[in-house]
Image (spheres, rainbow, N blue to C red):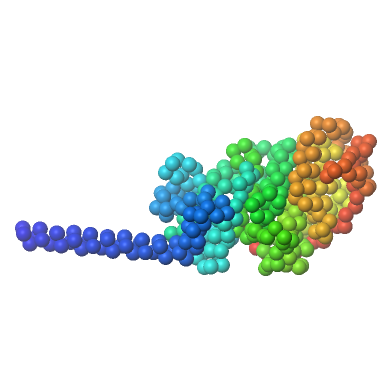
Length: 398
């Protein structure tokens, strides 16, 4: 009996020692991951409250494992080039979205750390809120507020009758996104270029209000800077042709991408059209051509044509056309775009009611401030050079 008891005590001691060593190894591993993931730098900024980073909290890996049911496949909200997003519930019962990087290498780590630094500087109701991060795991994890109604891309392109697609909602979403981008460019603590504006990076909350997301390739710039010279990054179909050719990204490059989103909202087609012969064509070339040939009303989504008044639809189309100008200098700023969309929304009830099939006379506009006036029920517009079909070889960023 004594031998048996001694043996059991020996096994218990070995087990206790193993658990202690394992715990020590786990702590050391977490510390190494935290250091490699630039956690020390973020911790320093947290303690000094530099750049607004005091709003970002460190979350433990254990809490996120519990929150996501150990990253259960059933909790996946979406996948992208940089990672996977899981739905989870924190210990305080908050529903969150947890973004987990796919790969560990520095190339994929940098966008995650960049997103933390960028989002720490942003406070806007139409920008997704970063609640915290976990840097003690092999791959970093970002924790966001949960946005329940998917993306604008899904709203526009998925055949789901449960989702409302009214023109009023689309116009409001466009105004909200333009306000968010305008804030990034001119009202944030430092100017920020998003660099990947697209409908799949615009999330919709429970009331279908817009939340701009995915700041992995965004960059903050000096107040006196006018452009960034970088390796071309972005998403095919939304990429500014001027940036693609010069590698110089300006605030007007974000304006171009937003113009593509405006066209999506009007026409309900994806930026790259596929014909019956599977030949890829640019939605923007198609849109500009239809405006130049004075038949773009025929290209609009039937729901948009049903809900909207002719004058406001032409006004938004003209604004989109200005955003898509090949020469960035001739595009409006995002502040001008936001103001113009807000004016269109305010003046909706004052537009004269006319048959949708009435001819639209396209001539030189008369501008009052940022808004273009209407005369005798006919919109007066200037012809802008058609945008060529640009085909940069670029994968879809997450």
